[in-house]
Image (spheres, helix red, strand yellow):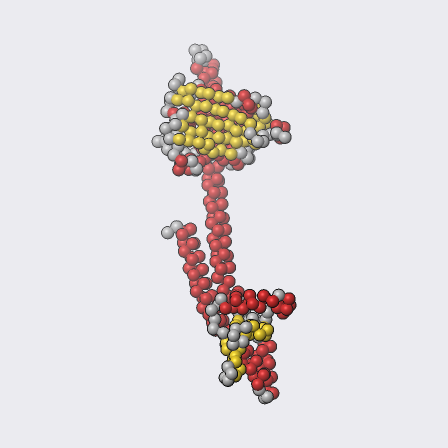
Length: 387
């Protein structure tokens, strides 16, 4: 049994116990109120028929002390006599239906009225119907209020625990990324030194530039990991040029059987506030996932357009597709369908887009055996806002 199930179980026990006990109290209060109504009726009779001053004074005290239970008097034919207690006098005078409606309400409680016999021959009697006092209503309402409070408490507790868990997860990934950057720093620095030695030796003119590119690439990756967990600096950038730059890099590392299509003409003059290194990382992850999905043969398409105060970038492949049940799971840390990998790429990409760039990253569509399309949504820079 996990902690959520336990909390719900405890809440159900508390609510059930409260309801049972409240019903018990309500029953006792209702019994006492019937006794009070009977005493009030008897006090009325005493005042009308007794000549004993002490009895009359006691009866008067009983009548005046009943200031909670509403009562309506009817005759033996169930016609309202006009005698009532603890109801709105002004409404009773101005609205003929007021007492009628109240009487119907009291009868819905299915209580046997208190009967006061006035005479045996001819038979005459008054009936006294009564409603719920304020105390009785509050007692019956109490378990509902408490149930709401318990439910609210559980909701807040779960929300806080989830927030703490997510915060802890974010700190874990940020620490892992920074540690990775730190660990990469030493071998990258060493590679730079070896590269300088290679440059000084003849015969290495062809390989040095390529090695230099890879070393520079490692430096960029190290820099990216180092930025995770820190607020990146966003700058205006031409998003079309940025996409073309990363696409050219990825083309060189894709096989000859991979076809690329790219249409970013709609963004030719568009400036977007981005962290270029982190945006490149997102595009790399999406293109690399597309390459994995098509397994070295197929089509990868990048289409861009300007929407309502935002830029839309679609990365689509003709690969194996994603099951609909996995649309949200693919962004969770550790989720992967590959034999190799940690399942962090899409999780970090979503965080970069949504937390750092105030945009969105989601699966636009996918069909197994036909392909997948991811969409990036980024807000336009103020200078490009469409009026």
